[in-house]
Every structure is written in structure tokens, then in C-alpha cells.
Figure 1 (cartoon, rainbow, N blue to C red):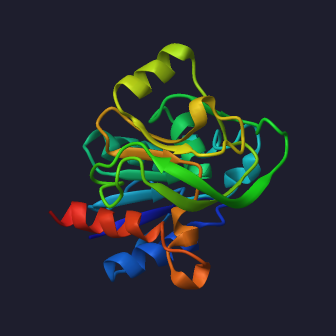
Figure 2: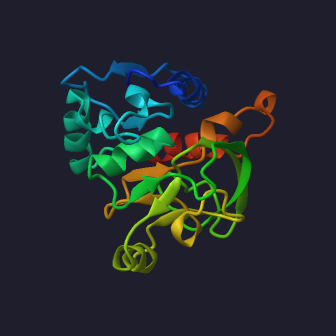
Length: 221
């Protein structure tokens, strides 16, 4: 499996997810700089967490207009899986690859701790290693993780089974406890929690490892 991690000025979780991918695939991913306009043939693209462009204007707003994101969008339209984590989720919404927006947390404070999530969608390629209804533990670290969309969009996400994860105890005010969603094709996942931060026993847990192992299995099938 060949993967790429997109790197923006201010990305700070790119190396973390690269390590998780290398452990799962046995191959280091390409670290693709935001200023690049093309990508090689890939099986997976990851837009990592951090503070792209210092979160100026809005979180993810400037990164969404980077040259590389036009290529990411084109690959997504062709069916290449794209995973956006934390700031990556924000970038994907700002780029129009996922509906809704990520607003300032309801408590107006940065939150950084482990949370429990309920798996709402257990399907390839991202969540096939989980059971629907399973409760998993991931880490969060964000200031603007409050997911918002209008009622019609939220109803559509629920009705089409496009909510991948919900918070068991909502840490940021997200509408309907949403922690992660997929696009209509199911090949783009945006989520605020960090699976890569609990993907090794030395990090204190392995619930996130199942996502990366599942991706490898799904993309090898």
C-alpha cells in the first residue's frame, strides 16, 4: 500500500500518523509538501492534525486553498481514500470535500484528553476493523472541534449512515455528538479525534491501530 501524508506549515501530527502508517504497511509514506501540485499514484492520502497556517482566518481555511488540495480533491473524486484527522477534518470541510464546519468549542477552551467514541459505521475502508456500536478510546486535542451543519444536512448524514463516530460524552458541543463523518462515496473520512495517538501499546492504547490495520486490509483486497 502506498500512502501520502500532506504537510502544511504548522502541521504537527504529520510524523505521528506517518509512524502509524509505516507500522501498519511496512512502508514509509510519502511526505507531500502543501506547495506541490501533483502526487504520484497512491492508495491512501492523509491530511494530518496540527495548526495549518497557524489557524489564521479560520482553522483549515488557508490550507484548503493550497495547490496540493486541488490534487487531493481530484484523487478523492476518483475514489482514492482520504483521511482527515483533526485539523485535517477542518481542511476537508473548508475544501468542500465534506459538509458542515468545525467551530470554536462550546466551552471556548482548548481540550486535550482521551475520549470514548461509539462506532456508528463499520465499513471499508476506514472502520471495517470495528463493530457497529463498539466503544473505542481515541485522543482529542483541539480548539475548534465543534461540528455544525444545518438540520437538513444532519438528517441526511444520519439517514445515509454517514456518521462514522459519535462522542459518548460530547467534549466540544458538536451537533448530535458527531466526531467523524464520511462523504457520499464513503472514501473520504474526516474526524476530530486522533487514532494515531493510540496506535501502539507504548502510547497507552491500541484502539487506533485497528483503523490503520483495517485500511491496509481493505486496500489490499
